[in-house]
Image (cartoon, rainbow, N blue to C red; front, side):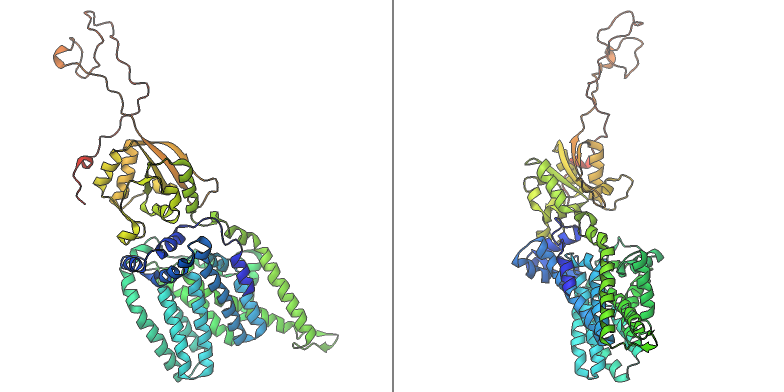
Length: 547
């Protein structure tokens, strides 16, 4: 737990929130009625977490406080994994399992994120420990703490539900009597019953995960590397070898192997029909990998204690053997951590996250003038203004019709396409905040408002300035200044009746008619700064507001 706490606090203030964290930050600061209204339309799956974070951020709204619950949850999980190892295989395996969990890069990543995944991992680890204790106790009363923790964990995030499948397989591998199955079934049934309303509501919000794709074998390999203390090299292959040896420890394997394989297997299988899988949704399964690796290491340590030296057998329980094994274990864990130190350092940089909204706000402060209009493409980009409002206090959001808290949405309601065209027609310059990929003209956009933004920008404006922070993120967030195009200069035309003979209709007007038409007349030059001709304004620009 001390190792996990130190790793979690290291670099916790990385100087910027990314999109999902900013959602937690701005939603948790709303009133409880506003949060309740939001959950009817979006993010019902995170409802309990938002209410919890509402109480946390009431103390002090800040980035470090936002991430502290995840740090504390990861610290508790490391202790719970160690406690599981102690109960299943002894103190040495328990200690190694807890430290392995703490130094795994994936654990540190989500320990420093203002989302619910580290808390869900803690809940699953606690429920698994309570499952083992209830099996050992044998009484019906011991199952109610298990059922309570499972229910709270699944309400915290409904995709923790597959852990019930893992626990059922554990009971099967342990060959528990029918009485235990009956007690577990009642506790699990109550938890599943309490979860049904949340599942029903979240089904209507499934569009929020429409970006997920069906996982292939490449995602299986990626998850295996994320679950190892090191994603490549000797550390990774050594971990796989120790996992294989850990399968020989029957009781430990009966708990750890289902936890490791069943939840990812269920989600990946379901995702072949309806994509629901992401690595972070099964973070709680990582505890199974740590237990198996520690169990394999414990088996190796036991074998070393039985090696004969000079014809004499060294007892595994001897003081020298215990000391030697302990030193070797500490050295192995230290070398493993140092080997992955560059990965841990990289993960504590804001540039390692999908985006950095603090950078966007800083650019806005330095470039925008008071009263400038700003346009977010797409509208989710408004999260930067909600998370870091200082950069956008002096400007006006030209597309916003109703604010996020008042509308019960994550980033507010925008004007209709017709109204948006009318608003953009009234300005000669507009700042655009967008990811580079969002401005790709080849991408199709189902939202008519987003199509209108890009169409008007392409037809009526041109880029004058572009700013990108030097610390590039995965998908660069751009700040662009668009200015209205100047219309091409059109020379005046003569009335048809005054054209000299031989001059075709539509020809440029002559400076002065001359009888000798073989000499070309002087033509009025085009405007020296004329831009190419632009498309005519869309008819809806002058249409009345209908939305």
